[in-house]
Amino acid sequence: MKIKPSIIRHAILSVVAIMALSCSSDSDTPPEMEEQPVNFQFQDGFETGTDDFMDLFPQDGSRWSTTQIISPNGAENTLSLSTVQASEGQQSLIIESKQSNEILSKADIEKGGFMAPENSIVIIEADFYIDSDANIENLFLIDLECCSCWDPSVDADPSVDGDNKCPGVRLVMSGGNDYLSIERGKIAGTTLSQTSFQFPRREWVTVRWQMMLSTENNGSNELFINNQQVLSESAMNLPNADVFRAIFAENDIDFELQQPVVYERVQIGATANPDAEDLVLYIDNFSISITQN
Image 1 (cartoon, rainbow, N blue to C red):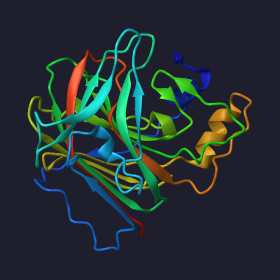
Image 2: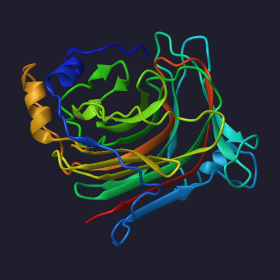
Image 3: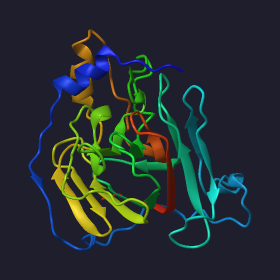
C-alpha cells in the first residue's frame, strides 16, 4: 500500500510545538523508582526449544501478540530467530529491514493486552545489536501506542511514517545519523532529541526508556543507553484530547479522542525504516513494566 503525506499530519507537526526545558545527567545508572505494585509486566529473551519463530506466539497469549511486516516493492523484510548473536542465552530476534521505496518499510514484533493510563510509570528495556555502519537517521525502533482512543468517525491520518490511527510515542534515530531520541509527532508534539551519545554499532547496546505518562507538559521522559542517561525532559507523552480537537478543527473536522486514553500496545524492531539502507538488526532481553500510581 502506498502511503502519502496528509494535510492533517503537516498541520499537527507545524501548529503544535510543545517545548520543555531540556536537561541531561551524568548518572551512570537509572534512578530507582519508588516501590509501587507493578500492574503489568512482560519480558522475553526470544529463547525457544526449537528454532521455530511461531513458538513466540503460544495460544495462551503468554508471549508475543503479532508481527507487522510491510516490505518495499521488489524486496522482502523478515523476522526470525537467530543463534548468531545473543546478549544472553542462545537466541535473539533478527530483523532484516530493506530500504524503503514508494512503500514504507516496516518489520517488528508486537505485544498488546495491557493498559498504561495517565500518571502510570512505564519502563521499556531491550538490547539492540545493529549490524550496519550505514546512516540510520529516522529509523524507528520502539512504538508505544493507543489504537482504541482514535475517533472511529474520522478516517486515518496517513503520513510518511504510516497510518496515524494509533497515536503514540516512539524511539527514533535522529541528529543526522544515530542519536536515539523520543519522537512525539503522532501525539502532536516535537521530538525530544539528544546529540550527546552516538549509538554504538556491531555490539550489544542496552536501551532503557522510562516515562511517567501525562497529557500535559509535566510528563517525565528519560532515556538511558548502556546505563548512561542521555535524555531527561518534562513534556507531554500521552495524547491530549484538547490538542487533537483543536488541530482537527482547523481542517473543519470534528475529532474526539475516545476514553479512556491509555497505551495498549508496544512494537519493537524496525517499526519504520523510511530513509536507512538495508540493515540487519538483532534484539534480545525485551521487557516492559507498567505501574499505576
